[in-house]
Length: 84
Length: 287
Image 1: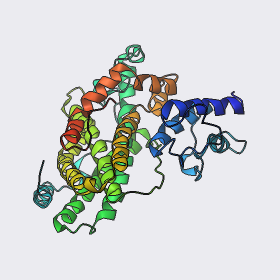
Image 2: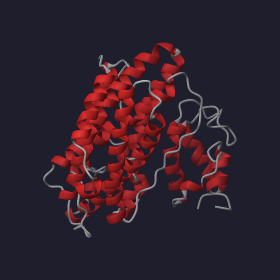
Image 3: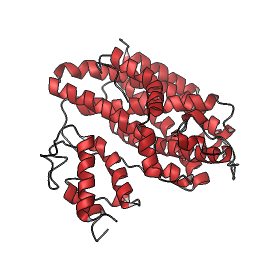
């Protein structure tokens, strides 16, 4: 089981691989991914697959709250936090 | 590349009226299905040709083909739901009455297709695979949202038609699956014709008003939409249900393989050539 830091770093590396619009030095866990267009709607399907892969299970897509994909921090809180 | 949209819409409406059918009696769904069958052409199966594919025996390959078809039909259900929402919003919005008349038939036929796809999935798999796509609201330039709606329809339907035609013609595939694919293709021929003409029409109308940045954004979106649409054909849910291990890694690995890329290029060639011919994209891109 990965720690919080490891999960966030895995997600950070995934964003860097998929988006050509940001460098490693610019991307922090609290960087806005959608507002800054680092990621678009088109990335989200693959991001969901990545989250499922790390988590080892699927989740209810209908229960996703607005803002869940804003930052790496919010992705962690939405899908890996204690409430999920 | 000039067509009179009114004439095309009138012709397609006449063909739809001539070919009108009752979806609830048109295709018979037996209570049980013999699962030891090909449900899709083996060459269309997402992992075809990979080491994982070669490791399966024929019975396992046929089982996988069933879940591949459930995925394909699920993608169609989700795609057609979005299409129906978009088409319904466009009813009586066009100044062209012939276009509105044809949209009625387009909606009618898409609803019928969804019934066939949904019935197959629910009756024989007990489920429809979930849709992982999410669209975030954003602002658009004049005509951009309209154009992107029809681009999404175009990409989705052109890829689907390649699968429909291949499976419908394949005598190895079980009859019900061939019938659903054949029926879909017969109606889609009209939808594809309409989609191509309206796409070209919208591009000619609005692209002169778009800034270079907007146009580049649209071209990037088209490429991204092709990739995302294709990625859904490599759904780890299929492999989990077929009993294949490491489903998520397998999906990524196969998607990125040369063999899969060649398949995507082959299946997308006609549609990409059309977009290039219309000037919508500048170059044929890799998938």
